[in-house]
Each structure stands twice: as structure tokens, then as C-alpha cells.
Image (tube, rainbow, N blue to C red):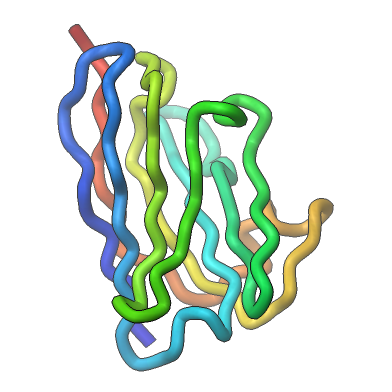
Length: 126
């Protein structure tokens, strides 16, 4: 089971990025996939999650209305579309997989995820 996160970079405030999380060794839609981020000196926080099977989507309050999570089963890839980026979105972003059908009270807890990608840096700065 491997996850490969990519798509980070430097973007100006108000800009957009699309992060990708490509899976190998398993069928991605059989797992819940979460995006987390960690800024220097801060704890890792849940950003968004798309659940296994018929998907439910969850978002942190700080990104609702700006970020969208999607899944392309034909490419075995989950995307995080990030719009209206703010300097406070600057962090290393990780994707992670969980075999559980996560719900609103659990999706943002890293303990429910058992496989993690390597992270991709997102920097929002003028």
C-alpha cells in the first residue's frame, strides 16, 4: 500500500492549486482518503476526507467553500482542489488512507488512518 502526494508549490494569496494523491497496491475507492496539513510548530490537522464506497465528503471549517475533494477511480487518485488560498493555508499537506467508513466525528483524527503519503509543501505568499 503506497500513497504518493504531489502538486504543492508556491502560490500568491487568492490563487489555486490542485493536490493529487495517487494510490498503488490497493483500490483507492475501497478506502477513505483524508488530507491533513501541518504547519511549523503546529499539530497536524484534518483538512478534508472522502469516504470509501458511495462517498461522503468532509471539510474543516477553515477550508469550507474554498477546497473541494474528489476521486477519480479510473486513475486511482484523489484530488484536493484548493481555491482562494490564504497565507494561513501554508503547510505540508499529507494524504492518508483508512479502511474505515469514517464519519463526521472521526474523519479528522489521524489515529484512524494507517497509511500515509510523504507530504507536499504548499506555500501561500506574495
